[in-house]
Length: 518
Figure (cartoon, helix red, strand yellow):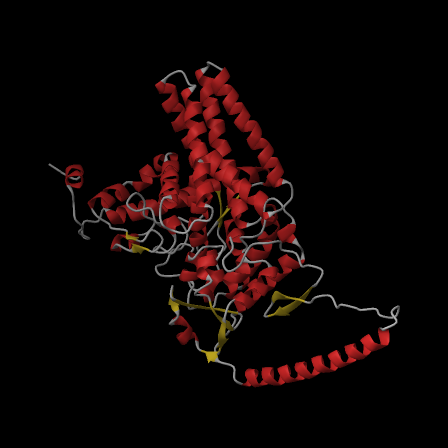
């Protein structure tokens, strides 16, 4: 997802020159020189005379401008990190990128990645986040932001230097552009799966065929989710309009989930990975809690509400290691609700009307399909079966983060690499199983290089592992089974802490009834 600029191609155009500073490339456009040939005109001499005068005047203006620029350079404004941190509100928002301080206050409302990434990193150096989310062509867009000055104590850690060198190397090799044929293959399979589901439900009277169709529909939603995830991070198809149409079809129309909601949620998750009060992907109170820190009643800065740990929360969390998988089977209902709530809210949503139409399309074809089933028993079975199969994807989302390190507070720009590696883990699998995980098995690599197509994540995994080893950072990688065990263990630890009555909370009659003894 884009954080500071508009997404585009990752290549370098014919008129762009690559330079390197602190290990990361940035690009400066140089227009081709204009040549005027007047040798075939009678008035060529007169024109050459005018050209000489124009050239002298231009050189004079250039010298004068250079003098003014030198004077400006001598009066550069330097800003300390402590002063930068003071400008961290929606009405006064500064950021620093490679030592330059920009005023992004007015840009926030037009930022393609939404306002949350800017708000969460406001008043900080955001160079690594900018590197992660933007192609080289986005550097020229920074000129549109008012420049405030220069960061006087700008420093680059050794980890960040290596990270930016690796990002530059990936860009030079053109890996951001090598998307392969995954999109075409997945779309072809999705069309076949959808046709099979419709045919099986409408034309077959067998309950077993209907049950199989429900499973296929759940698998179809999983693949549409992976494709929507890809399209939110980079262009899976050539052209902005085509990519947008693909998002609406695979997300809103086919799955009933707003791509606008997903972008807002997923951007916040990537920027504040595993922050208990800033990352929505670890905020599931009162149903689930990954850490006892949530029992303190933290405020969710994404949902803008306090996550209270009351009697109901204590009851539900106390048994969360038993309810985790059943909850995942119906977690799709929460995504439906969150999508509708955002689209009906006053928050900024790009293409709100199209989003609403797309979600409406889903709620026309899905109930219509179910209506072809012969009885209410089969209809309930069909819905539960399809949701349960799609719930495997919700489990996959949780495995990558639930058992990793968490923290409280806003994300920081100066430890970007460390936070992303500590808050994620990979799932080891053979290449032939990549379709099942849809790129989520390389979560560490994906969080460090979110614009990289999923087909390239396996290729760079050894480089990321080596970089983590060099700097003594964790690079967690487990099998699918081991990741499940770790997740359940984390939930069980928090559940047992929730049962500790030494930490009193308001109780309700349900809690008292369940815990009555004698």
